[in-house]
Length: 166
Image (cartoon, rainbow, N blue to C red; front, side):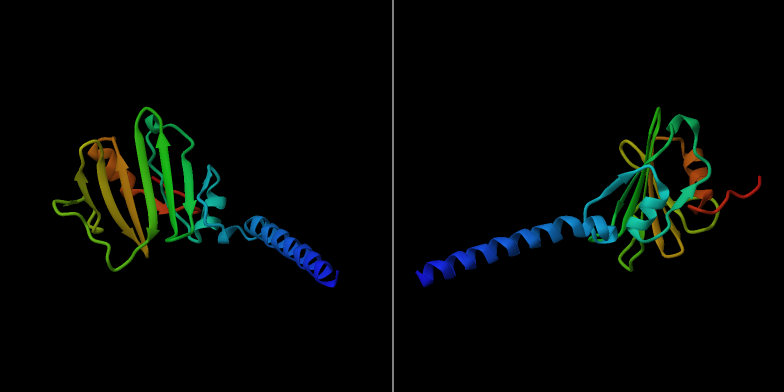
């Protein structure tokens, strides 16, 4: 009888422990959002900035045919990244992440005017550009014209910075 009582106590403790572990597993990401490995899909720049852990650079030239507002996706792991997507009459995707020593431009990339070291190339469906701003690598893919792509890259500013007076 003693062994049955001990076994029942063991099972109750085990079930209680498993339920407590499950509760911590479910509640922890709600309490500590930066630790949540899932992507965050939002239109709120502040939420995306908090999730990724860095402030993205945004273009202040955004043609109307891209539509508005953009959809933001922030990922914390395995490497912090923010993707900004406009999906209107035309499309543009900006992907930003901290740069690394392994970042290289693809062969055949041409420099964009402006002398900042930004490059662009033509893919099968989109024009692509890579810009380095501070410690961020910013990749842009769009079906806009090259003139618009150059202007988008030239007007990149940190997300909370006001656009320069023109």
